[in-house]
Image (tube, rainbow, N blue to C red; front, side, top):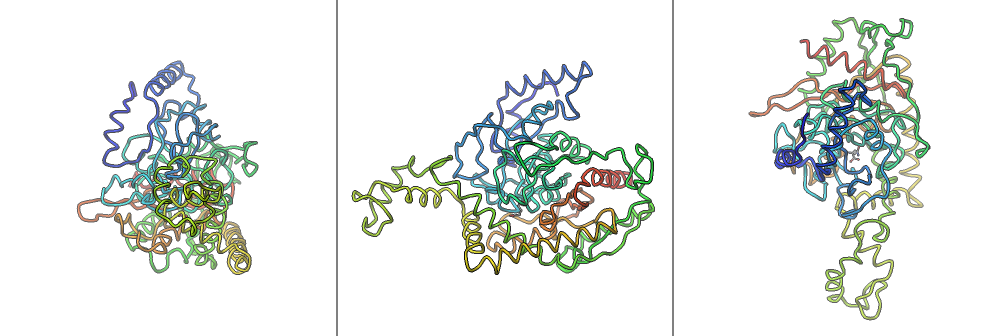
Length: 492
Ligand code: GLN
């Protein structure tokens, strides 16, 4: 790339709305120049030096605003930069802007963004998935080479599948969460998007590693040159004939679009013809994973979102007094909550309640209320503590499975990309979209979503993705297996 044009990018983005903010063009040009010099001199900082990168809107940085696609963080400027973002900058990645998402990463379609939805580049009438829909669409449409997102219950893998790109969710803790706006702290992970497995991996390598600013972060051993079968000599090529793959029968039951099932069957046949062994396995608690996830995620979200009080960050009702005053003046002061006698002043409680009522969207409010309810005294035993027990069981079942197989194949989504508005009236229908992705976050294991086929829908070709799951810390082996499958598909 010689010269970068934000104007071109903006024009391209008009029909898609993948971006919420673009970075300063002059600075981008300067970074590209510096990177070019390094590459010419044979001294690139990393494999991503000079590559364009988009950042999901829930990573804080000091180069612009951060709003997590919420009105409550409108115009918020963070005083520091997320570790993952800093590592990309240090590696020579060219950050061009911040991408759209569901508000606070709550959703599966980007329809929950306070700033309008992102469209699927393959069919503009359809959602790109979510919550990292902007990042997936930005890569799929070629507006950037790479993107990062967060995955708490599928927010990287599901939009990757809907947009036909590669999306990687690492082991919990493999990338520091420092500077990422928290959703569900025990589930949140940071991962990557690329057109190819290699690109998604290179970006992950840049971001991965223990960080003193996140006590849950860990180092993942880079086994990239090792074979899957440890008995073989290192540095030899990955051998598929030693691979044992599990297909959990619970994942291929009712509710899965037959076109997705057929596409995965096709990959299974191909890998079998290379000598891999494919066996059916059972993870009996999988059907409970969705309920378990939504209880834990909502509880953690309601706690994490308590900090948006209209005082410390972004939007405050206090700063939009004209609207408030006129509303308050119409009210009966005696019926109001903690107002001063004049009926125009506000107590602290007023500021909290009204800022939150106006600043948060519907889905966010729903989750705060449900999360508070299921963790409140008297209900926590029935819901939250039960969910924790189920979570342990799911983890154990995955551990058992990985003592028998090297990896697991699974669908990413039960359906093809759906149309705007199709699932918005029924939150439970929307939550069901996450049935194959959330168990992975509940167990804290790594998984990748790779495009394997397309399905003809009218005059459009819609992408189909497949997940490859591995045991904790097996991130690089998952990349190896995914690379193998990508090669097999491109050869056929
Ligand atoms: N769709 C899921 C949810 O709404 C997952 C979102 C995510 O991974 N951030 O919770």
